[in-house]
Length: 271
Image (cartoon, rainbow, N blue to C red; front, side, top):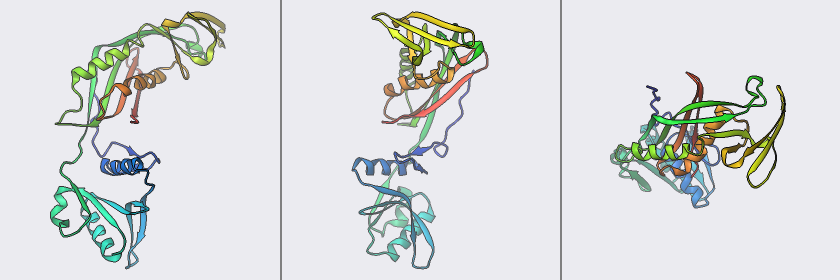
């Protein structure tokens, strides 16, 4: 049976719309809220304390500073900034376990549960599709040929009640999407030279000579890029992502092209 690596919260990459790599999901949530409110911000703002020490505050906005409390060092930093800059507006967001240490301070927002990232994988015998393709840039594969490929899907996101997605629901989504791939001819759309109501004309000059094919539209799948197993993995993710529940943050697809070889692509979902 195929296995999937365990993905911990510390392993998951949280990247905001500015491209900043953030340490935790809480920081990403703050960034998303600021973006929604159309508030510009700077991430990891450097600030010099009165004693000359430099500290980094998670967010600097036009209206003030925001610090996410992740550990005891953050608590000490927050208290020192409040003391050194009494006129500077600063608020903190922290886990409820820090409430006793910060209860005497103002502008604190506590959350009670640590967000828990989890992953599941679906490896089912029914997750397979037959297809034909041509790779004009690869001599061996530059003629029309076919494969039967099996698929494994990995989902990553925030668990609710210790559950990411019901396996039955996830399996149904995957099977529905795979019907769009089954018994299709995959080809880079740049090789399409003409079309009519029911056919495409595909033409290219490859290592094996000049090819010109007329293929039915309803059994042809035009791709942005070459019809490699890597690109098929990416295309499957594009179809799966919009159908996933909102707590699913990333989709990974393994496509096996023959025995013990294939492609794995994982991509975050932009909501």
